[in-house]
Image (cartoon, rainbow, N blue to C red):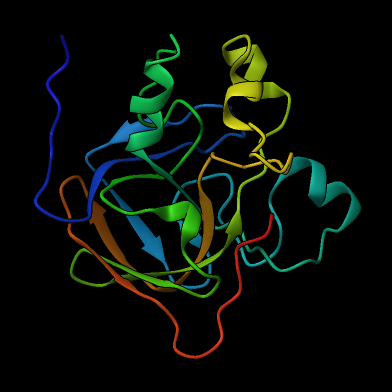
Length: 187
């Protein structure tokens, strides 16, 4: 049985990166976030869009997907439905615990560790590749609510406003923007 780590507050559970556009990423002890680019050494790092499909049609779009974050609570939830998932399996760079990522408003700042700041830009929209990883997983992470609206559960995307090392067990401080707030949309 796996040991569960329950930090006292919002924290980093895992960090990962991949220099290739693989579905899953390699777990690391720490990653370096680079201002305006993303995770050093990651295939999605850059000022312009790096997502393979989007890059073909809109190569000069700004990269709003420099960092992918998923809440570890999703893995706990999916385990109850028989799925076995671990940090980095779904291609996220940072796995968190203790933050309701999906309900943060657009523009929320995540201060991670001593220096790094990630601004939340939107929701991740998973593609069919997720079913190649585990059959039925796409439906599990894209359920419908009582009104029939799709609920996207595969985390959030962000841009790096301030660089720094991010390591396992780093504290995460959440700063919600003042004034009117917008719900996250897919980016």
